[in-house]
Amino acid sequence: MIMRRITVSEVWIFAEQRHGTLNKVSFELLNRGKKLTEKLNSTLSSILLGYCIKKEDIDELILRGADKVYVVDDKHLENFLIEPYARVLTLLLDEYNPHIFIAAATTLGRTLMPYIAIKKKTGLTADCTVLDIEEGTDNLLQTRPAIGGNILATIKTPNTRPQMATVRPHSTKPAFPNKNRKGEVIYKEYSKEIFKSRTKFIKFIKDESQQVTVQDAKIVISAGKGIGKKEKFKMVDELADILGGAVGASRDVVDRGWKTYPHQIGLSGKTISPSLYIANGISGSVQHIAGIQTSKNIIAINKDPDAQIFKLADLGIVGDLHEVVPLLIERLKEYKAKEVQK
Amino acid sequence: MRIIVPIKQVPETSNVKMDEETGTMIREGVESIINPLDLYAIETAIRLKEQFYGEVSVISMGPGKAIEAIKEAIAMGCDNGVLLSDRKFAGSDTWATSYVLSQSIKKIGNFDLILCGERATDGDTAQVGPGIASFLDLPLSTFTSEIIRLEKDSIRIKRLVEGGYELLKMKLPVILTVVKEISDPRLPTLKGKLRAKEIKIPVWGPENISAPDECLGLKGSPTRVVKIFPQKISREGEKFIVKDEDDLSEAINKIMDYLILKELI
Image 1 (tube, rainbow over the protein chains, first blue to last red):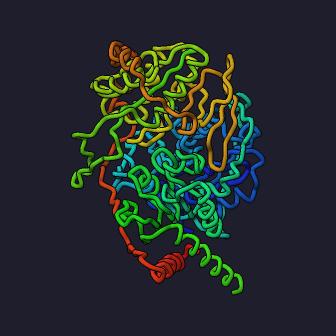
Image 2: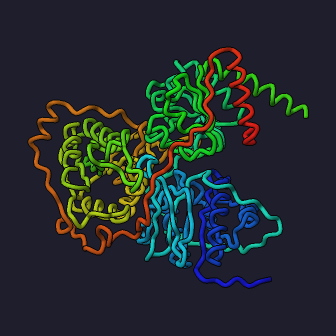
Image 3: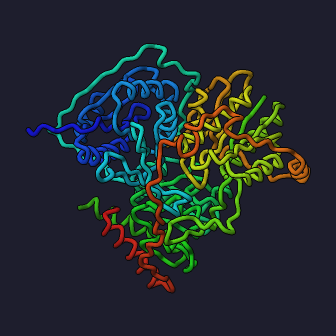
């Protein structure tokens, strides 16, 4: 075995869990982290906070690339509350001084990371889509879209450590597991007052209209004004269902009350990065485009051949969505039935 | 009840034009507006004031003309405002911005609630709200979609997270960043506009908020912009026009082929 020369301290990724389940976005962060540690000759560590943490979750982080997993298991960490989470992480950062610390740009990551960056008086870059190491230095280059996605900015934190970033979910593939990988698990314990909180978690209310949420989904099917009326959304729901995707909506549609706000995509709603985005009857305003720009594949269906959305679409169908979508649903059903027979 | 609402003046992004060569925004002729997401925080604050009495103060860090944004918030119904403006504030990243805003809030003092928009539509970081909370060591709820109940020393809120909502009970004072779902912003009234015209907005610099130079502007910012470049938005692929029945089935073929080719089904 070749001994690794450690030139800088560790690269940390925050392994996010919700309701006791490890969020798959953590595996994407491991993939990011691996590339960085290779360039830096460094060690990749996962930080896992929660309650009754499952051993298989810790193992999976190791199989997917973590050299070390720091675990803090306490009943006060069962649900995300800013004060105990930030205190525990600040103590961990003080003790181990990692070189880089990244988390996912989820509602949790985008709350926790800025709170900690202030305490550590270090730089934090939001919602990055590209991470790299600067040539000749050990600085992290963090690239992110800004001004409604009109520009990309590359940012670094030259003088303070750790260098912190949140990373847009789905902007990279999850790391694959390697069943021979071994890693070290470090359990940390803290005294009671570290877990104090002025906020009480009462409960989580599942949104039944979001079987798959737009931020988490690999496939998002959305509709805009062109859908015509609320009832017609059924076919969009059905298309999403067949493709295993989530349902999105443009601002117009949400303002008309045809879909609820959690479905809204764009500048005043969610920014998403799915593998596939299908825009039905969406004209493609600047605000909407800002929310979907980093989608891998975009298919647009719109009656208006000059609709802006076609500028962004890999495949554009100029036609009536009320004709196209039902036929597409039919074809997909036939296709799926055949696949099952195979 | 005292509510403080930090706001930002941003360029009206729906018709942003970029200089393709330099990758910078062409600011000439671009209107400045209150960050649209801050309007939800302003509206929420005014509604709480109407319900429980009290005072809503708006603060904003920016150039001299950001006073327009503060005046507009006053025209909507906020009571007073402070502009934080000084050459030394220029070039601040989210750390330094959060610092200046939190120092100003400390100076204003004696508040129950700080309400912020979820993020600004230009910088798009969503880091300043949590940053202020951290400097002031306050409980924080981000992505807040509803204030369920406000009591003497606590508040119950609902926040929008992946897959649903969380209900939290928080001890006052707190800081909330809010999403669109929380309110429907009103328009400024004529009476409000007249009041805004008359009102004097104090302008504070570093000396007013006891902020040392090393915490301000570029000096106080741990991050540096390495480069800015335009995002290539156009990636126009095939466009297929449906004129008749045959075209329609061809269109479906094209979608199916695409989905299969890209292994999306």
